[in-house]
Amino acid sequence: MASDTGGMDVAVVGGGVIGLTSAIALAEDGHRVRVVSRDAADRTTSAVAGGLCWPYRVRPYERAVQWSVRSFEVLAALAERPRETGARMVTGTMTRAAGGPDTRQAHDDAGDELAAWYAAVPGLRRAGAAELPEGYAAGWRARTPLVDMPAHLRYLEQRLTAAGGTVERCGVGSLAEAGEAADVVVNCSGLGARELVPDPDVHPVQGQLVIVENPGIEEWLVSADAGAAETTYVLPQPYGVVLGGTARENAWSREPDPAVAEAIVARCARHFPELAGARVLAHKVGLRPARPAVRLAVESLPDGTPCVHNYGHGGAGVTVSWGCADEVLRRVRALRDL
Image (cartoon, rainbow, N blue to C red; front, side, top):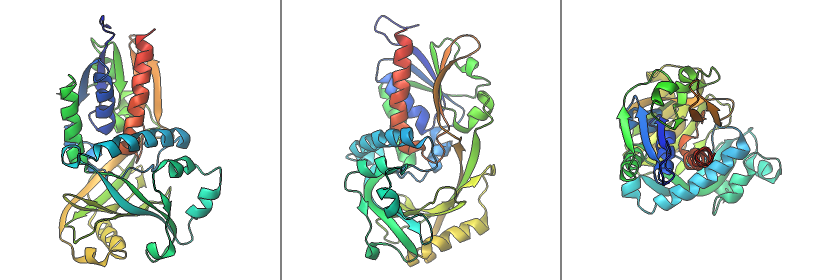
């Protein structure tokens, strides 16, 4: 139970970016935190993520933008130590294909779901015609955090340990099992919430990508219309260029499809011809844990232990991670103060 200093015993289920940031927020607030994860961080979906800080396939939009702005602030600060944290500030272009929604018109529409994001990102501006790749009607130019996820996950684990938290590599059969001897359970199980909660609304959105040697690309480029099964993104990372991608609803396979990989490289090479001959370093597939809306709420487990759910972040895990972690901390503080 809560100690004299106000700390609580907290079990966090899930060792990806959502679980680790939630655990850090709690541990640095004085709680005794134990992360339970079947997979090592470098084996989670988070490790496959491209790492661009930008809201994508996540709802509800208003809350997602608030979470994203907070994460932007944290990641921008971490980008001052890129070797340690894996975060860097990189300039790039977010585009819309010709014939798709015009982002310039959308920005002028007070009802645009991401208008608050556009307004919050320092220096974000509309791209001029000469700055857009051929075939794109409109876009944004911005300098945003771009995160080397394997390096960032190692940093998060080290930061959690420094704050007194621990990580256990084991599977759990239920949230109640994870919460034995804990005052609070924090459920950051991602796609695993489909069975653990159980929550049938949780489903995968499969993302395939190709990593190639960098032929000299320094800026990122993304074209990812909401709902599209095929996307185009080029993300320069220290270990190579991440090329994508796909967003296939309810596709469960984690095996790369050679034909899909070939199409990904071809799409990206239309904008960066030098990529056509770049040496392929790796093929990867990740399953984004999607849901109609992020579930960030408190409920009681059958034995009465409170559980803070934090899952269903779709394609925006790294983008909303620190904002959601702040909200988890607020929920746990409220439980402590009951």
